[in-house]
Every structure is written in C-alpha cells, then in structure tokens.
Image (cartoon, rainbow, N blue to C red; front, side, top):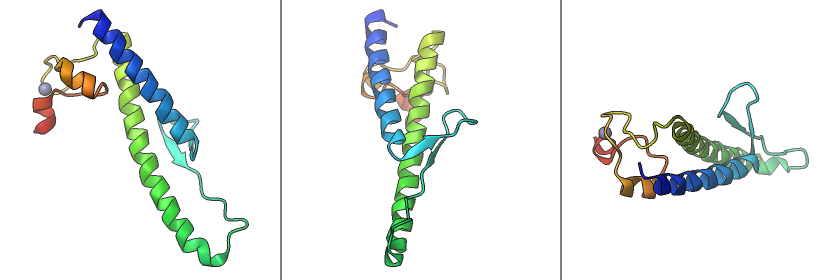
Length: 119
Ligand SMILES: [Zn+2]
C-alpha cells in the first residue's frame, strides 16, 4: 500500500481511537483485567427521587447499548492500528484480497472488502 495513504489512514484511526476512548471514559470505565472491555457506570442514585428510578434504568440501558457499540468500534479501530504495525493492514479477512482504497478512506477500520462485507 502507498505509504502516504497508509500514513493518512493511520492518522484517521488514531484520531478515531482517541475520540472513542474519550467518549467511553465519560460514562464507562475500562475493565483492568479485560483488554478492550468497558463497563458503563451505574447512574448515581444517591440523591435521586424514587419516582425517577424508571428513568434511571432506561438511561442505564441506553448507556449500555451506546457503550457496547462504541466498544466494538474501538476494538475494530485498535485492531486496524495493530495491523498497520504488523504490516498486514488493508487485507480482507475473509477472501485475503486487498481492500479498495476508497473503502478504507471511508471506513479505515474495515476488516473486509466490500464484496465480503455485503455477503
Ligand atoms: Zn473479501
């Protein structure tokens, strides 16, 4: 892969990683024992009114699903950065072919080529 393109994609991935970590840290903590695993913090209920507990539960559910999708994305971004380090970035995990530059530019954490992705 073109070095200039690779550097550009690496920069994008690093930016995404930092943004995702920052967002996760705002409402979740990373599990110290499990790499790439985050847990949403329970909302602080100490001074919450009892009537609000249903809202809190809903809020926690929302936080959990958001946490889950951010965590998955962060995992993909981290994997892509690891692959760049190993020199195996930009190769489809399914068919082993090179992933289109256009696809990587739109989605630098892509693990598969567009054909395999659409299957
Ligand atoms: Zn493929």
